[in-house]
Image (cartoon, rainbow, N blue to C red; front, side, top):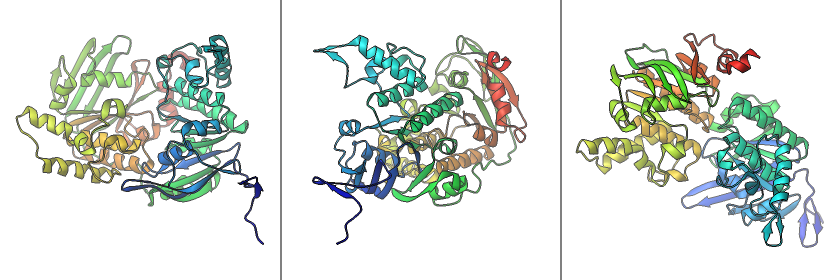
Length: 516
């Protein structure tokens, strides 16, 4: 008689395996959508294993299956050699599985210690032992090199610090499997490097880490293996040091992307935007920037340099204290976002969920909102057919992955939400558009699509100002580049062909750090 590999342990079969986690043939079906179709994945102890794929490939659903948020419709989960059912997130946590996300699932009004030990507080009888909880929280914070107090409110912390709280929370539950979902998307390079060190330290201590990231530098810098999903299906698993980036891109998107940065040479036209000596106390001072028709102008710098704040002042979100703003040859005085949109200025905000979308609305309603608002102001009401014509066209143009434009925006992956924000801005037919981190959290195929649209729009005479922390896209997609540091413009580069990341970073460094 031939037996399958494994030994019988009571009523359960304990499989002899080198993996601490295996998922075989996982399938998940939602009404009208097969989110996962017979996918596979495995993880070793003391390994960082990247999970890659385009937005909508099934990665988020897969993680929810692992953490017990979704129950699979087929397949099996094997944990430490034993077949298990992750019936809910609490069960997954008890079995040593934890996850940290780009948007931390924290309680901002509670302290760091309260967040770390939420659900498993230290108690003396019915009362919380605050002294012990703060002491234990301090030990965990020290383990992740955190320099803030366990009594600080989480809402007062930076995004990077909040992620350290999430890692400390995972350590408090003795997590042996840690899922990191886009952990560096909202971090500066310096913060990302600090997170790398912590991830590598956890790996060396035997923790198995699943890394989900659209950043190839994250994957190649941290992971040993990579698994690719495409269109809800398993494509393959490879040793990262044995495959080129171009190969991975092909596996992720199903085609070659020969030119990731399709920048076209364009003739520049009239000046669209000029700001002179713009200042806002505590945020930026004496900023001078201009954008011409047909130009893509990059604005970069470290997180906190004041880039977003300057453009929010231009768009009317906040009023500057001094300086001048000119748009389309007209000096702009006290202004609002609505007024600037009416003048032909579009703005894609950095935080798409908070500022860019109505998540409870459909794709159709989000895309057509700017047009509807404009038409209604003119006493004209857009027809349903024109509304759908507009949104369906934008869906096809940007390859938004959804069954149709009646799909709720909140049900989309992060990258597809970003595409809806871009579509929403383009639908208003602006003369110039400000793009704040347009490819943050977006997969490589979608990045290429957004870059191509940017290039096409510039060639049609649209002015584009792109705020970005991604130096490769800044260098390769910009005609000119401004660099900010500590609220001031520290450099302007007109020759981008010979520009390096090192030169930009040097200009972006605070003067005190650069001097040392």
